[in-house]
Length: 354
Image (cartoon, rainbow, N blue to C red):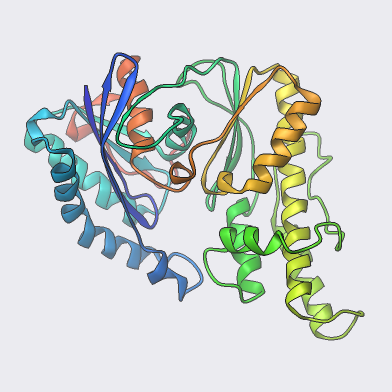
């Protein structure tokens, strides 16, 4: 079985062609065209610009994917596309291309929720052009999804079965990283920059709050933490407290901010895992690439849930890509769920995970 997948939910135009055979996976093509450089001067993604770049890139990238895969369109068995959530102008480009291709070659079309892709990125442990085995995850399973647009704790009792236990009530954690980086003049995207700087800082230096740490539920809030960073930096700049606004100070700020955000993520994930007696915990989303988060969560699992498994995707599968969409689509084919015609799939910026 060969699946062609398309992902255009934000600022990456991505196409993958993946072969699934007897529990093994061969990545025939996996192309991601990033728009980070274009959006960095604005400090964030501009939806209209993202859509224009998707329109410019989607056809050449599809053509390149087929060249890399060395197969014709007739060899494709299923087409999958991210149909939400995301930026609606961006989503419409990918969905439109997928529908046109599905109609043109007469193949079924599968709409994939973006978060499904981030979850199932964990099912491929090695990302290269060789055949790889699919991970057989043991359920119940808990996924902490952390990215620029999403922060959620999701319980899975079986494949394609999702229960959102908690989510952010305001900023996603990745968005908070971007805003703190912008506040300090560090550049965009903020996540990788802050992770690198935090290694040189003292994460216990500044006592930032842990928002909603004791709320009794599994929801998050990062807006107040971001505001606490703002006040801290303003007071330092205005000489309202004894500090020197230099590189070391910035390193201490981002290290302390990062630790505060991750403490809440980890503690709530562990509490949910204990309550629902899960057998595995997985990470998903762009922030899951952060090594400090990986270590903090791994240490907490080892201390509190030693029998629980822990997994996070290969670094190249943490950011938006189409290979993760193909991996999720394979599950839909396996369980015969959500397989539609080209007419029945539409873009939905607020698509719910269910």
